[in-house]
Length: 326
Figure (cartoon, rainbow, N blue to C red):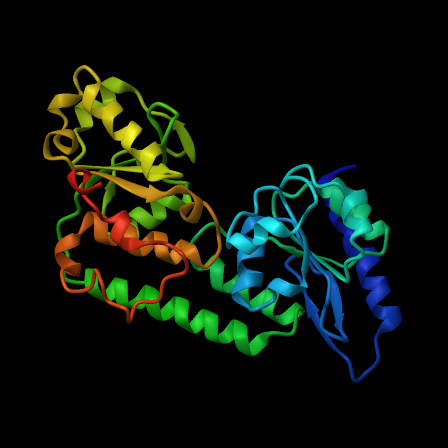
């Protein structure tokens, strides 16, 4: 079945069900592919099909209502105790059905054949299909807040996120010089991101210059020769732990020819938490704040311990530590 036909069937099944149950007094909400949902009683049993959705649901205070998550949903720690329904690209329809959810929230990248089967079982599937920039996070929060009937909580979360973002943008306003940056996915050689990646966008907003930004790909292997020639001032390594980061940092220090690279010579090799930086949830704002501080620490001298900037799980003291402090 083609993608367009799958989308159409999902939408048709859910829209017909909504129309059958609707009345003039009932409120409705549409998901990102046009499915219409009737807002009756707030959902009590929610299945999340993506880690960023799980994080948003917890941020809205719905942890107790979540009955199923993917095996990759590991934040907050309470998500680990929830029932597992498979992975992001291989969710198990039978497991989801057995959980008897009154709402399933899906994200782009979940297989359309699975969503089609869930819809055919008359399970309400709310689909998010949003952009690839940080502005996509408030959109997702707003949409989820609407369908779970937590509009006030969603509004407060969006206000907090946007306020946090604006404080960082304002701190960067005086910056004119953009240091060159190489962003590396730990454990995969010189794997980096090009201009079509959302992480390239975050780097640009943090007033850094991505040395791989001229390449129109999301992720790819950078050549050693080009890396040495481009001579970045800063290396940012996405890794899952400080121990993983330390190993990656030492790898750079011990590679023949890398000793001449400015970032290696100066020790400006930094750790960015891969978990938070890879998800379109509230912690992506933490990742942006961390990047801004890594690239332009001079603009945040008095705000390293500033409690006025909310954090959604990322420890900025660890993130901005220099290699000698780890």
